[in-house]
Length: 419
Image 1: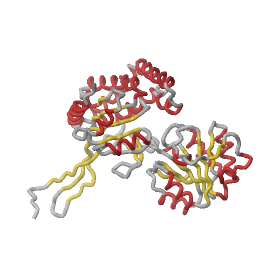
Image 2 (image 1 turned 90 degrees about the vertical axis):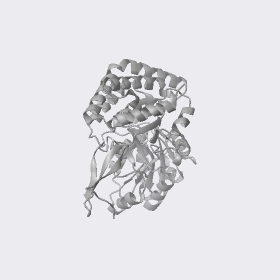
Image 3 (image 1 turned 90 degrees about the horizontal axis):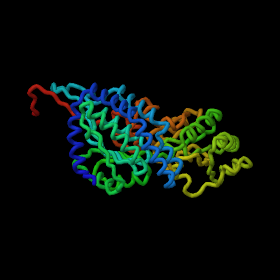
Image 4 (image 1 turned 45 degrees about the vertical axis):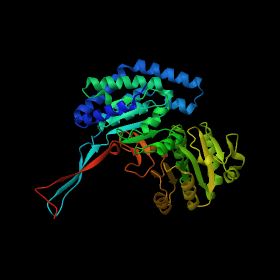
């Protein structure tokens, strides 16, 4: 049995201790975590193989199995843990400092959020990412991974807690709900006395469940129905390369491309090239009637008519939706209706069209002539990320270290009283 109230109490105590830890102590702990993961590599990979075998036996999709697989990723996960240690520590940063006319010295100081509750599904690498980013920002965390990753997560958490204890930081800085019982998700969402922020990492159903049931603030996102619009003036050679990268570089992630919108003036010339170029990489296509007509004889066995839900589907696989639009306005309107406000872009050489798109498409990340795959903390210079937010709270887009902090007002006077 898991006693969540006790976990919350211990996390709150750990968070207070972490808030006093120096940057040097936190960085030493992050390197110790990387060392512990390396030392326990064989145990971690054996546990991960058990999860993979169980996943295959239970019929998990290839996309989910890819997310679950640590066999080739563990080295990168360990390197990422070390890289977090090299990032600037935002805790204690003073900003917006000013002296008022009355002599009061006013500033804001970055502080940890406190205790994070992170609920996620089939990505054991998230366990390490969240633990290291939380520790760097002096936040304690309660993790609840999916049942698909139970063995991997237990092995990872054991190594992390061992390193914490060896470095003199509280092991309860990182806690893990090791039961697959979904009731614990609901219980965690009600633990507002101890948990300061809920961050779900998973599909739309998980995000909806958290929003509808939590008594704690929830940051949702990471669900990407991502679009690229090919304008009349697009450089078609560059557009093919961008579309290919956005769709095939890693199709099982949230910033992978789902839909290509093509202006009708270039559709007949460009769409057959898309099918030929991406089809050679195993991509299959769902085309609405005008796209099918533009393809003509190029509509081979990789192309099927789009169904009513296809433009509202995050594929997470080598499937791409195709649609012809008459104007930039129609492309923007389609994105407004079907996008999840994650990552959307325009491929164009017309500055006015680019500027309109960037201004009018209200997604967390908007692009001009670049792949949507750059919506990522490390790719955008944050060093690492805990999640991608599609909300409009204090954090939007990739959430790095700064987004895991809040701030307090600091007011210093000299016997000041308000008249």
